[in-house]
Amino acid sequence: MTTFAIGDLQGCLDPLQRLLDKVHFDSNTDTLWFVGDLINRGPQSLETLRFVKSLGDSAISVLGNHDLHLLAVANGLRRTGGKDTLDDILAASDLEELIDWVRHLPLLHHSEELDITLVHAGIYPKWDLAKAQEMATEVEKALRSPKYVEFLERMYGNKPAKWSNKLGKHRRRRFAVNAFTRMRLCTHDAELDFSYTCPPAKAPKDLMPWYAVPNRKTIEGRILFGHWSSHPAFAVSNVIPLDRGAVWGGSLAALALETGVTTTVDGIV
Image 1 (cartoon, rainbow, N blue to C red):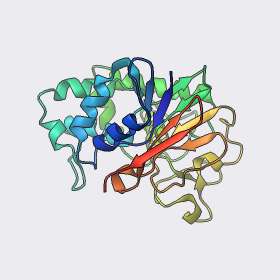
Image 2 (cartoon, helix red, strand yellow):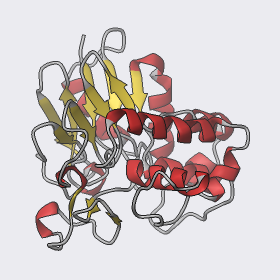
Image 3 (cartoon, rainbow, N blue to C red):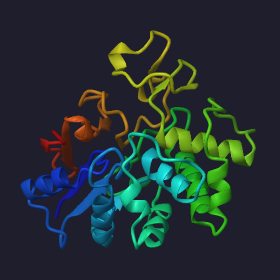
Image 4 (cartoon, rainbow, N blue to C red):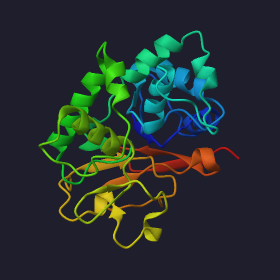
């Protein structure tokens, strides 16, 4: 019995199937953890979404920014962009079922047994695990509500860039979405910055990866994250990046959580 944590798929089903063959995945005994961004940019967004959904209890996926983008587009709040590959999903006969499934995915998954937390982009450095779980639950409830479109209408925007316990409901939830699904770099005092997608080593001197902010409150336990395809395969000892840029000609990685062994296959060529 093995738990495999897998990096951003972004509609790359063929590499995923090759990876599952390579690790001898057995849906009867093994579990897959997906780091979010199941869809978009790659050529098989619809097929990928259907496949992960079909895995049922054998798979857990957190929400990524591309998954949330699908929800906004499907509800007429955003238009598809030139690089989007969502048309097949939007035209699918099971669109409503797929949308309902996506909006019930979590933002954060934590295993007490393994002492590992799975998120798409990261955990805001000024939050401990309990606070992160609290904020994830608040957003999840909004997404699962019959009035979830009202939440999506207020979800977009780069502000507020810094957390405060005094934030109102809508700004608090927007900040949480940005932290969990879009965050890469922060200032020394934990203000989010969305200007750069470069590798950490090429970031401006006044910015640093979220996990390097001084006095980060989630030092204990391991955190798995994706979202940052230009990030090298190592961050710090208890923070593990999984996005290897499969959709951009990189690789797709699976980390066996019980053994620490990482297996990769080539992504889209």
